[in-house]
Length: 243
Image (tube, rainbow, N blue to C red; front, top):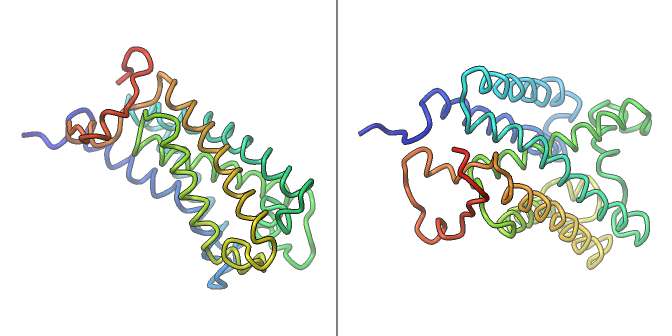
């Protein structure tokens, strides 16, 4: 019996590599916050190579007619950017209007990437920070689309809440000086803003994926032809199946 039902071994391997590449930047931020290595060095040695690898795999998927992977990458770019924009609307309101956060996360990421932590932000660092922020959104969207595929929108909200919880328990909280879940800064407003912002991210991502003709089914189906029991019942067929 052939291992793969609808995905060639080459596409499966490329998908795994692309998933690993998409996870590098979010992990790099936490690693740098722990003080092990600077974000600037990780940007040069890990984040940029991972980004180039992901883009290369996406282009290869188009030329190799790896439909699942190519569609997932394209949808991740579109949905990830829009979902990140939705997150930012909520985060900026919480930051600017309610003082719920100690600063701008993209600006912080930027000064770290540009090695300007002591000098403060400038145009270059802001471009780097917002670019990395958008790439993180694309990466999170790609992981969701490849693994979970076309599910109901609220599945993506649960996924986003998991991201938010992990973020608020990560070493980044020590870097910000706010403690886990922001208890030392704004014990109610901080986590509320983070969860609301990620709810906006998840709802936008989930809605776009649920109704997109590009979205695949969950990966277990394409790998093994396996129905995931009750999970299969919440999969959504938005129009003709594109797979």
